[in-house]
Image 1 (spheres, helix red, strand yellow):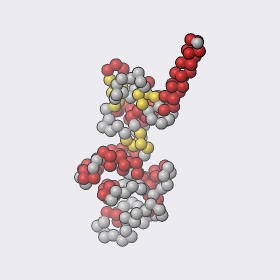
Image 2: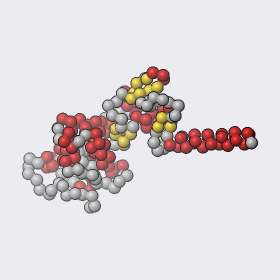
Image 3: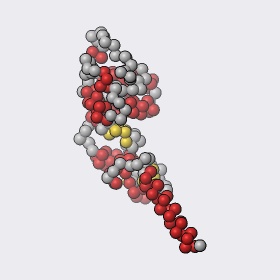
Image 4: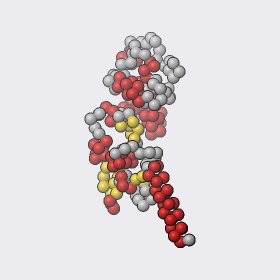
Length: 208
């Protein structure tokens, strides 16, 4: 096994939280799926989410700076996002750790909530017909998939995932605006530039 760190020894004291872990006795490889294997990641996380040792496992992973694998129900990307938001010293606080973990896993642990629910609960009208985001985080994990408010806005409006980065159109002056009609993905920006160039070429030909 290439990613397994050996951090979970074969024998532990009865009081060790790892003895009570839902993964005890199972093949550790299941928690180190190949990158991009969303089905395997989801399967591993589903076991973690019902584990009585989930928070202790997550805490241990942060302490050891685990980069690979699923630990405490958190994927590699989710742990990275938490480390960017909090310092390791802050994560030593059990209450803050619990808050960070459950925020990251909120949508996975509440599967009945849809993107439309998230949109309606977290958006607010802004002056001038703009739309803002009242949520506490600018990015989060929805059913294990990292997503941003702008990506939600784009998807709900267009009915498909964005290509590349989603950004405000040049005409929208409000930095925090996530109105779907004020957003463009990479492909839409490319098409717009191409259309503007074609229009200029026609204008130049007529003026020649």
